[in-house]
Length: 129
Length: 129
DNA sequence: GTAACTGCAAAGAGTTTGCAGGGGT
DNA sequence: ACCCCTGCAAACTCTTTGCAGTTAC
Image: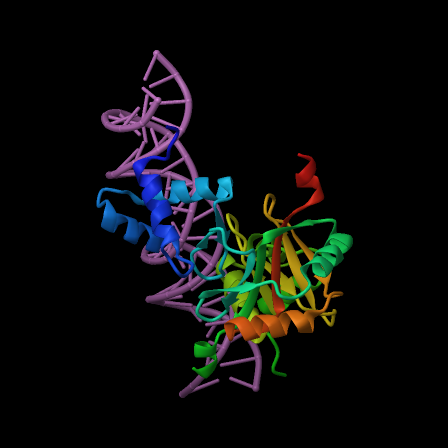
């Protein structure tokens, strides 16, 4: 069977069970709990492989490490990042995505990727503080 | 007069004259042409100051340095980043931003910042290659 | 046997920081 | 006198890479 390596499968399993948008370091930490010999470079390498395959999405965050999102058979969704704490939240496209897509492509000639909407904001807990 | 330091003013001038979304390194290079003694740390430090002041926006890019956008008295606009080459393009919100904003805030409780829309895509030149 | 994979340690890119000194009011 | 600023060099964070060995078929 053409399967993934033990380590890669563990990384995928870890990601599938996560409810938020972990950094590489968090994924490394959790994978290490299952297999204490796994190395950081294996985690980084595999995250890149999975991004290439389109299995996960990589979300760049200013002043902090990238975050990753496992794409289950969930609905397409966007991400909103708190500018202050860097936490990432999901949202669904209840608004008119087609209109937006068409407008942007007309203006820039760049083809929008559906998994690629990232919005900066301020989350509730940071707003209070 | 309560003015900026010579160096900070030069950095602002450089940014104002740019038509794209430069990295810190590009800004450093261009500022250095005006004032060869300016240091990289001054550029980084001032970019952070200007982001804090809300004069410029910082755009995180995976697998590459942040990019910066000088906010002139231009219309509010979003950014679309080519996932392949990292280049950033502007677009205006011709679509219904209010609908989007409301939908996202309802779902996540996070308040959207108007200068913070970033979308990943594939630009024309990368699509060909 | 070979292609894709691993851990390790070192290197790389991008950015920040401690320090001693300089400028403006 | 004070505060904010600077250049320099070193430090730091995040990520990638070269290498030698391992695993899966």
